[in-house]
Image (cartoon, rainbow over all chains, first blue to last red; front, side, top):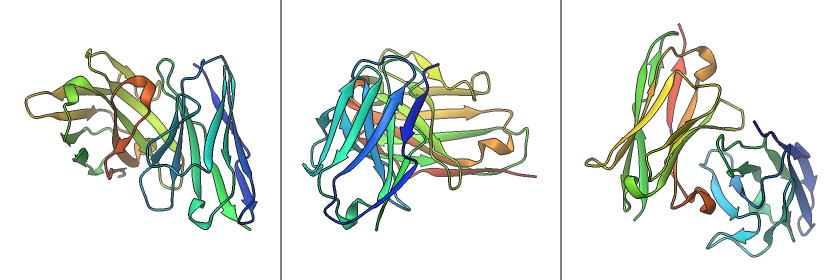
Length: 107
Length: 118
């Protein structure tokens, strides 16, 4: 099975900073990748699918890029409400594996 | 309004069985992909299973042979039959919906807690 590895596991940044989270697949998955945000005590929320397509209603400061094995989620200007854990998920074929998550905090 | 409501969680002894339900409204489970995703306390998301419009089912290796996903189109409800449960299955179980595999899970239920303990 294809493994999904996120880095870093956690990060701390200041409000207004540009933040990048990386997700690497152990084999190519084309652009079959989604990003989710999970705030403490809440259910996951879809941010991006197709590696780079912003889900309706998601702020434009979030963006995704990549194809094949390497993907990134970027927050262009970190806001206090972005404190959350972010997960990538591949779905080119089953199993639809999640990455282990990246916890984003405010410095 | 598109909505998913899970039920059926609870405390179960190791080796026991439990059936979770995921009642859908605002869309038809027969024409969408609905997944089960679980989250152990303090841990990350783990994909468990999915059934899509064609009826094919897929499972994570960790549950293959023990869990079975099914749906009742007349009740617009998805089920997860879980057998031979172990303490490692303790988690909040979510059901999540996507229109097609490409689009990501845009709707999630609130989750139901399964606790496996003696």
